Length: 166
Image (cartoon, rainbow, N blue to C red):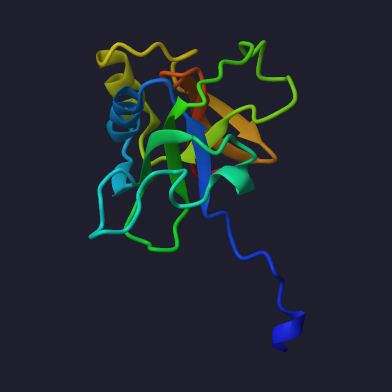
């Protein structure tokens, strides 16, 4: 395929999750199997690390004095794998309306494919989280899987899917 004929879109690089408490949110995602890939607060030599310093205000349509802490989290060792970009904003601080339900417009949930839904469910319950249900067997388009959902510390719904043989 000629270079001009190749699709411009390559992959999903990261999904941004805004957090009210970065440490608490990172701990939640570590509990379910993510690992820290990059702590964007850690200085690298004399390179700027602040969101305003690196020039993010304009492309994010945020004020010039924006500030916060962020961690990129990954699920494996693939350097091309999709990351979670978790940010705790200290400026601006914005709070929106609460989610009404999973059918409203916008991002409804993030689904994660897992090996053992029951083990993750047990770990979440032991850590004090409240899944919506136990892992339930569902068959969609002929494909059986175990599935359950839980909210992260800021109310983002995370769905766990363990695919099974038909």
